[in-house]
Length: 249
Length: 315
Image (cartoon, rainbow over all chains, first blue to last red):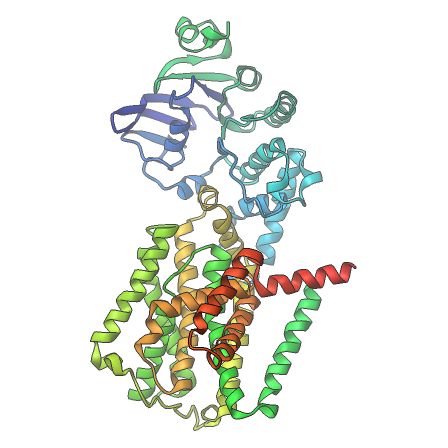
């Protein structure tokens, strides 16, 4: 049984159908990329899964429980962590405080209005582990707003990772990075995903990044799924060539 | 400035304040008591404005609720002063849950407008509901009831001052513990990026309602102390002008520092007293001071002081 199941997921904005009857499965341990040209509905799809946007129709199931209609914080509490296409951080806090606040969300006493030494200590342990996995230990003490763009992208991944999510959603992790920064970020991410312990859904524009990281690819075009398969299958699909890859080949 | 230095400075300030009744003339004591009440009020607003970036234009509602509740309890029941004040604060906090539930449906400027609307609504109610508020006459002759066990120490000028000082110190310790707790860390998250905080799994609306309730409870405590301090309440306590003044105290003192707004309140009291003895249009001059702070020292008096201290200590 798949970890994440989308069935007939549809979202209309006025007359525009941003996401049109999308049916998709993500198996546990899989790294799946969602690709498609601008406006294909990739980000809307992410927002539908994470409860930011409510679907017009269709369902989202996670680990055989309905996520449809839940608010963003409940979706996260069920083990789905995400990053944003446009970097979303706490700029005045240090990198470590950013990850600590993220890890704290997994603690039963995250809301405790006094003391909290034990809550913080636990969150800090997880934060430091996540920072180390992404190679950010050196910059952990710096305010997040002052980090390089590349480190900010990775910091967001560290924040999501510190929550030990069962499903990780990465929205264009290399967005806005230089060629060198992208290279580094993809190296870090592929090391991270190498052990196959994590289930990942990835939106990405950069085809090289997709073919290096993903086991499976879903291609969206104007809100609909036009192809679904291994990178080789997708690469050879004529529909995909026409809709998307054509310009690159 | 290190934490130890800051703590010893605060401790020193409390000691000086505790000794004040031995050396100050009655008129100055009255002013100082009112300054501490306003300091408590401004500090309560700082939880919202400074720590959560919830800009309230209606914080007078908290003060008025506390003041009228305490006034009624002291006038119509025999509940001792201390308990009446605490009950009134609690009442203000509970009412705030309802107000915050509605206001947090919106955010940003709309949130601010809703807080203003609620305060003005209460202002209008206070004008009409003669039985509870005395309408435009207000409540007069509010006593400083004795007890428990017949204690009358809080009825005198110095005794009441110590009650106010104790409330302020206790509220400060409470607020500081709150902002340094896991709950406080989430508030900082909401302040810097609410959408991100939500996506990390925090029910941000519930945190905002909670902080508004605590803020109103402490603001209500200040109002509840004011009623027996002045011996009367009137609708001015709920007026939007007062909401604006307390916001100015927070910003001039230094938002997000707890101490700053207390200093801001004292500064406001001092300057408005000095200016008003000199000119009737003192508000105009205070407005100019406010503008200068916003333009050149947005971190406020306490922010300037701490920066100056750290500069001078590093040479």
